[in-house]
Length: 300
Image (cartoon, rainbow, N blue to C red; front, top):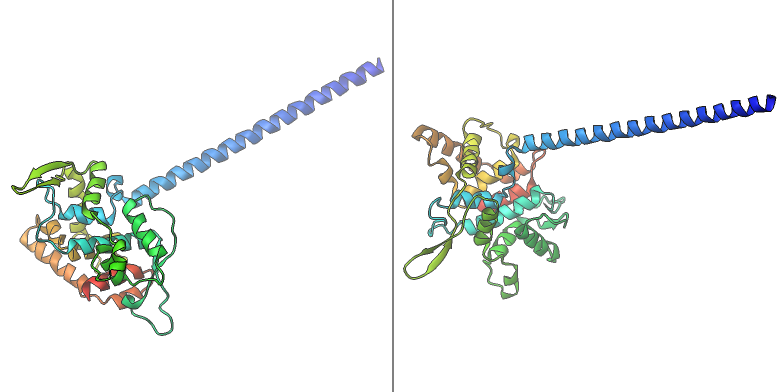
């Protein structure tokens, strides 16, 4: 009888221990599930916050090059002005700034002699792919070039504006056409063939006017309703867009719909930005040296 009681009590004890172990395992699993859920919710909140910071997702997926080209394209005709000979180099400047803002490029240290922005070389900070073919192509050239080149040199080399036949391979060809095809893939433009009597040309008329109108409205608001009178407090991408759109001779297209008083005020504030000294601005806290180096290359 005593042994039976002992066996029974041992069995109860083992069952109790098993129940406790099962309960503990269930509690641990629940805790892990809650932690995973919390992490997921935090991640979603972070993504939502990033989306909120970036604004509309349809806007943020456009690169600086695509935005400048979109401002320069005629809506119905689907091509840039034949008289615009500035946009080619402007688009190359956009590439350098875009790569700088994405953490791929930077300027070399200025050193004790305080080299000027245009005398400092462009250094590859990271060769991680950007996901954009044009940007990755430019990044590959810059990474593999020794000794490094300056911002001014890279704008000329990527544009093909060099007399050195050994450096012609740096030229990025058909940039406008490739950017237009990117915008076609993103649902902003379409592709057509247009006859110009002596030749046929592929054009890219606008199909999604909302994207371009949002872009124009953002540029207008940056120099009117949301003007802060301090370039260091402006969004770096918008600051770069204003400078490069002006250098590409397409900024006035964004201001064309404005009333006369608004237009005069907008152009006055743009001139204030153009009158800034890039060297001084680049030394201020949180300034993008590469951005101001590109600005110096176009405004010198």
